[in-house]
Image 1 (cartoon, rainbow, N blue to C red):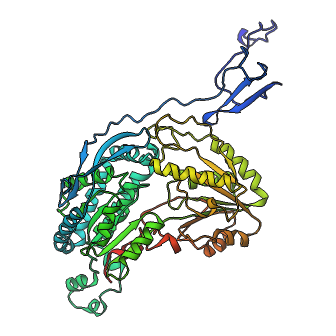
Image 2 (image 1 turned 30 degrees about the vertical axis):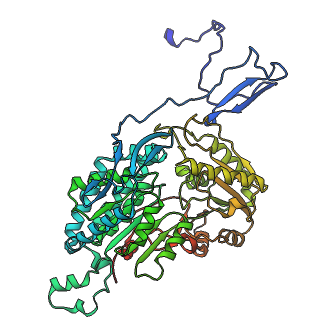
Image 3 (image 1 turned 180 degrees about the vertical axis):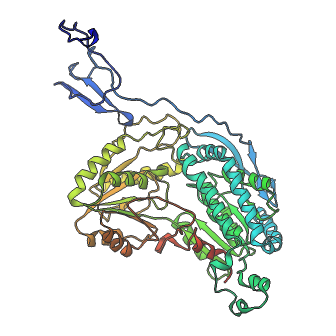
Length: 556
């Protein structure tokens, strides 16, 4: 037998135990010692045999577990100290020379100064769009599509720069800007570029008897519906560049010209998009961008030269716009707030559903109009879901949005953080139980909110009825499918909903009875340019995306 295979008869020498910062499975703590969750869900052991008042003893153990090394985004984005409006193909100063500061919500540092739009600025933008309309609308769909393709390709080429700028200006995490927002922005321009020369197929009945014309070219021209005209578009701060793409791409594909107003706290990526319009040679006046606060938006809504208003934002502002437009010839589409239900049945894949809950409410710090902010869990699995949700919530990393490890970034503004905190206090005051299990240390500067959820929530509680627009979840239970439907539909909103079950028949049965514009089944917050999005009731009307989204930008 070879020596290397011989059986060892000599006993091994005694070795001291090896120590490691990595532990495959945490050991049960000895008597008198507690194990607690630290930030990011890591475990640490602490001996409790110190003094009675909790003073650490020399025997205190060091924390064990994994840690994340910082992974900051290395791209440096150039930001000008001051920006004007983009009118008639060039940047211009505001008429009254008024500017306001835009800050990085992650550290409260000033990024730049943004022009405050006045009535005169809006009037100049509308005149520019009006002048550009005849030439742009008379272009063939094929030629308009070429411009949209160029815009999409240039967005892809500058994707990393745009992602960093979106994160700095809005507070969302870099991995969301990089992996979700910017790819979808390019996708919307690509998708609508393809529709630009196919509008006669989107609306095949348009033209009536002209479709029987013997002249193929005349027949084609008569069959294409004309654009509405000059569109005023007002977008929110939660998805600044994506909302711009949702509105600009279909409007341009259908031959309209646009006056766009971004949110006052997140104007930088819209202005960077204007630079892309310059680079691709988009004709002057086709897209005009006027920055400012609500006064600028009101000037756009009230301007007589605007033919259509598209607004995404709060229900309160949407109602004011609807009243202002009523009695005029202006077209209107509204995508407003929501209090969307996320329903989990006992036969669902619970671990999969937990990820859907996280995606539904904590994505983008809860700054999502269709966030699944009301969770309905069948009673038989309520305790299981609560425990698994608590465990998963501990693992989320809250902090610097430009760090690639971060799961939850900064709240968009101090005012929004104040609103979220007000709702949290209301929930506690009305008797709901707050679970704030995430232990991430929050940065000393910036606007941050730990993700949390409430249990023991009643349908009458404020947190169950009103849109919070933050990382706060209201958990409720149900016994039967009928009760789940009754509770889910008991809301003035109707934007989105989620259903989790392993039974296909139950999915179709429940989804068909939910009064919501979008129903996700065994998933949540999935978007595609080809899929129409919009709501019912106080969540607005009209659709954006898909062939249905084109309808709002043609005159038929």
